[in-house]
Length: 275
Image (cartoon, rainbow, N blue to C red; front, side, top):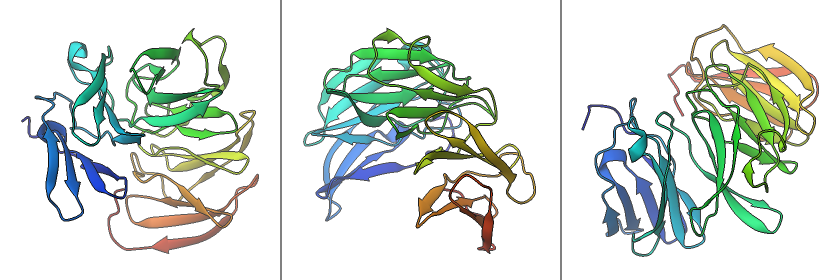
């Protein structure tokens, strides 16, 4: 409606594909391409467009959409079989392009949303807010990483990193934030927990960082090629003891996983790579 792009995000449960199309709504199709249901979400006013990936949780599809007008921001769950709204919770934030994640915290499940200024947990069956933690900056895109009994949220343009212990109630800023790093986190790529460590890339200056996940101890930092502002979009991935960072130029930096910065190889696709 406003000429902004839509990042088409989808998930699959083995029977249907569920796609979130921003102003075009939420759609379910079967494996023959036949439309099962479609839900209009009304006119969305998110500058830069929409980017939330839908979350499959049991028999529901959950997504959140923060918008310019806070009264229009929401997190909602839809029946994956019919598209019927199961619950909808209004939100006060108005900037952000993140995606929700579901985690197990003690004897309950939580849906985590990292967003403008705060990280939230919602009850996946009712949409009730369970807890919130301050500490994020204004613009938040990365999806939180999970491991070692914590979730790791990053925000802003080289802003803070928060390690939060879930399972709390109300405002947990002073009780459940296990550690924080004041700056250096990614703006676009999500962080990665692999083994004992948390990996990320600061896409403002092309610097990779590794923390000890449990304590927040800085293990190393290293530059990945030439510094480019907003030079990385893809999130890091790990396999077989290696961590792969791919920048927008199509260069993949292969690092040895662990407590020392060790560059093993650089693969070049010779093509722009946005992911």
